[in-house]
Image (cartoon, rainbow, N blue to C red):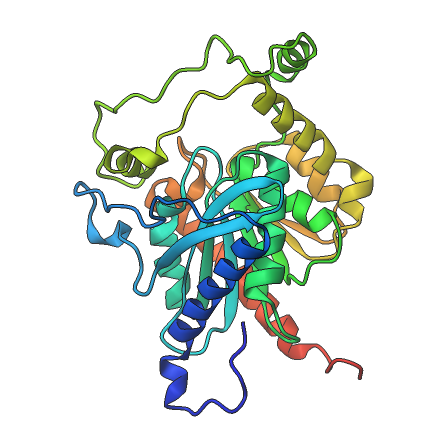
Length: 332
């Protein structure tokens, strides 16, 4: 979001936090318009006592709920840098995560002068795509010359790609990492739904269990936040959920749909993924970056691959900022 031109230089230091608060107020308006009141439970979560300060919420972080027509509200939060933002990054958490696992990343991006929005995973890819579009169009509301980047990994790639494939969206680029573009249980899920068992859960689905391992580091951030906050603990996923994931993966990787994505895309991967590589080739503007393989996706991995991922990520954002500044004025 861009500040009004009449703001003074003195006011510009506090302006981003004011605009973050205004954005949350807009979110309340969206909720009301959708006739979906915000849940009674708080959107702010208790910080796990096991974590070090680098994993705490960044300064100015505020969370609330986004109402979506036809879907349950999705939790989101925003933080702005202490001076006028140079870019806006919208991160979408995957189903394996929650918004809080990206607090360290948010701190890194804020230090670069970017405003950071983080969306919790939505119940389905369709709901996630609507959440992405509502966030960009209804909350961020980019102005001409603004740089807006969508970002997410693993299953979050599905709603992000779906959002940009559905129609014009004023974003400057998309960053994706370790995408999950297939569902091993697709066939079984289709059979279960066809047989009227969509609401039942696969035999291998386990209820959330309190971890007995160390949860003080980056790789176990999701566990740490779930121990401290029961609302973040996932339930068993039904067959219908797995079918929705499979259908979304098939849809977003359709070559015709991918060719309609005009925004530049950066794909960061830590291993060979033929389906992701094929999708990148089908996109009109897609670059790939490789990082060292690890047990966790790059944002939650060891310092080496995470630093390489972050360098590729912020380099992409800086290139998008430069491209916006080099673009001719609208209508020229």
